[in-house]
Length: 472
Image (cartoon, rainbow, N blue to C red):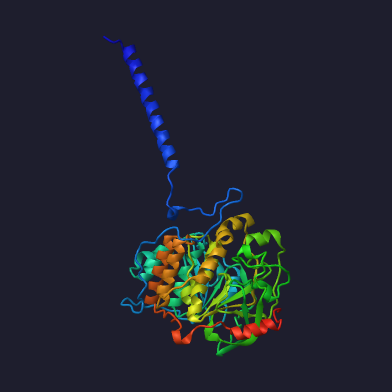
C-alpha cells in the first residue's frame, strides 16, 4: 500500500508533466497564430516602411453591411410642429463656460435668434448670470432639458437627440436642428471665445440678388486661402490644410476676377478671426501669433466649384441651401470634426452649384485655455489623413438622385475608409430623417442640361493666368 507521501509525490509529478505538455501546446499555437497571413481587407496599417513609419492610404478596409435608408426622403407622414421663436436667421453656439462677450453680442444682434446648447459641464446658472433669460430671441437648451426631451420624444427628432453624445463638440448638432426646425434660412455658427467685432453681419447684400466679389480659381484641388486675405504675417495656413502641401505651394497657378456672383449660389461664408486665428497646433508651436487680417469687405473671395479649402465652426455663415451640411461627426475629436464636415460638404456642393466664400475678420478670438500638445494630439487625423481625404473626395463619383441619398452614400464610403466610425453613419441617417420631418426642404442637384461649371470659366482662367494676374 502506498504511503500518503508517495501519493502526494505522484500527484506533483503528474501536475508538472501536464503543465509541461500544456506549455508546449500553447507555444505551438502562438507560433502558428503569428504566422497567419491576414486578408488585406482586415489590415489596419498599410504602407509600412521600417525606416520611417506608417502612412495612411485611405483605401477601403471594411464594409458597412447595413442597409441604406435615405434613398427616398421626399415625403413624410410624421411632420413635427414646432413652437416659437421662429426666425430666419439664427446664431448657434455650444459652451461649457459661463457667458462670454461673444454670446452677449450675438444675442443682441437685431433680427437674429440665438440658441445656446449646453453640455454636462455647462454651469446650471448660465442664464441667470448671463441676464439673457428675458430675451425672447434667446433659447437655452440645458443638459437636463435635452435629456428630458430626448427621453420623452418618440419621433425622429428624439431618436436623433438620443444618438448625439454629451461631452463632445458635436453636441452643437442639437442647436443646428433646433434652428432649422424653427425657420432658419441662415445659421451663423460660432465659438464662445470668438468675440464679434460688430452686432451686424453685413457682408452679404441680404436684399440683393448678386454680390460683387473676387472669384478665385486655382490649378490645385485644395487651396490655401489665408494668404489671399491680406494677413499681417507670411507663410500661414488654416487648420485642416494638408501638411504635405506646405512645401509644395498650392497657389502656383492662381487667378482672381472681380465679378458678380448670385447670392443664391453661396453655401458657406467663412469669416476669418483676428488676434488668434484658426491655425493648427503645428503652426502655433512654430510660427508667430497673434496676427490679423485686412478688415475690408473688398478682401472677400469666392472659390470655384472645383476647389477645396477647409472651413471651421468658429465664425461661419451657412446659407439656406447648405443647412443640411452643418452636421458634425462625433467619432473623431472636436478639432477634426468641423474640418471633416467642411471637406465632406464640398464634395456635394459642386453638384448643387454651391460655392464657398472666405471673408474679412468678423471676430477677434481670445482663445480659451489650450495646451498645444493636447491640440496636436487631437488633430492627428488631420495631419495624416487630410491629404488622402481631399484626393478621394475630388475623385468621388456618385449617381444619387437626391442630396440625402448622396450624403448617405458618401458617409458610408468614408466609414469604409476609416475617416469616421459606424455611429457617425447612423447619426447622419437619423439627422436626415429629423430634418425632413421638421420641414426642411433639401436642395436639388443640377440637371444634365444645366451642367455645373466653375465660377470662373476655363477660358477666363487661361486668359487671366496667361496675363500674369496671379497676385492679389
